[in-house]
Every structure is written in C-alpha cells, then in structure tokens.
Image (cartoon, rainbow, N blue to C red; front, side, top):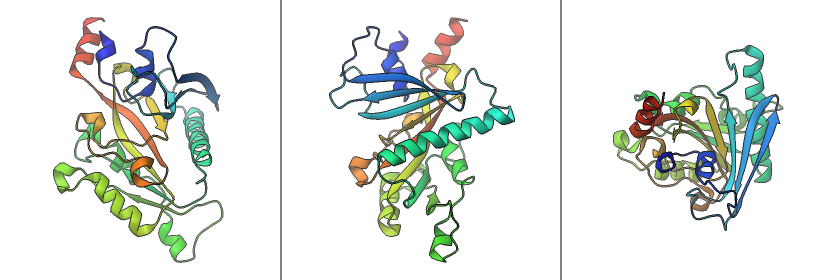
Length: 239
C-alpha cells in the first residue's frame, strides 16, 4: 500500500513501480568522494505512472553514513559540490551570476531548512558591485521570501520580481520535502534541475519555480523533513 503514500523524491516514485520495464527512466549508482549517489534521469516520454517532471535527479543517501565524522562531513560537501557543478555546467551557467532562494517558514521547524540555509551561505553580489570580488568566487545573492501565509504574496511572484531586478543567470532553491520512508527523513538530499513547487513538502503546493516559468535554469535542493501520518503509522505498525 506504500506506493500510494506522498513523496517528493524521484527515487521513491520510480521505486513504486514493481516491474522493471519503466519507459523513459534511466537510473544508475555513483560514488563521489566515498558518498553513494543515485542518479535518476526522467525523459520527456516517461512512464505516466511516474508523477515527476522530466529532468535529472541526484539523490544522496546518508542513512548508512556517519555524517558526524569530520572527514565524512567534508566528503559530503565535496560530493554535493560536484553534483552542483555538473548540473550548472550542463546548463551552461557555471561561474555566472546566481541567486539562492531559501523557501519555507523559519518559525516552523520542519519547514525552516530554506531560511536557515540562507543564513549560512556566502553572498558576494555586493562585493562584485563594489569591485571587491576575489578569485574563485562567483556573484551570488541570497534571499528568503517567507511564505504566503505570513506575507500574503505568492513566493513565485516575489522571486520573479527579484530575478528581473538584479539580473541573474540561474537560481538555486532550497526547500523541505516529504518522503514516504521515515528512515530518509533528514538523511537524504535530492538535487535536481527541474525546479520546485514551494510548500510541496508540507502539503501546501504553490506556484512553480522552474526554468519553464522563469526562463533561466532552476536547480532545486531538497531534504525530506516530513512524512505523512499514514506513513508513520504504517512504519510503527510494522516494527
């Protein structure tokens, strides 16, 4: 019955299909800096049973990794950087001007990933504007637009207005996701070039932030922080 449970992870959507003849789906396993990564490519003519957009999905699985170890933590950072470089290179925007958007509500713990991320990135746009940029850094801005429930403004509209004003070449959005597996909560990272719908992880899906809508590449980084009550109940029952 778990195949009907809600999930934002492409790897779980593909895993719901029991037979192996899934049209338009390619999967493979990679190892970056000793970190296991599942790569899922969903083509335009993909199986209609898969409810994810066509695109490239990287899934970093940390369930069997001691990420509190310093060396392992460094390897996770390096692996994520490699994935981002691959996606940005494929979109021809590596080293160009980018904007990082932290989606979510900082006052709600499972929805606060995006805003907290913005507090921990290095923004450089103001340095570039003042001629103080350094080698090895690209022009990056960051913003957390809040949520429609507290601002009254559609998040996609806020991001669109900022994007038009400051003229960026790509957007990276960070948001909380939902999983159909409690073991993946806070232990899985999905990185994709398909964009995202704000609020999808907490069941409040809003207007899409994607390349199709904004006209520039949108990379989405998500971590599952919630599961449906039915998922939790089923997992407890099966213990």
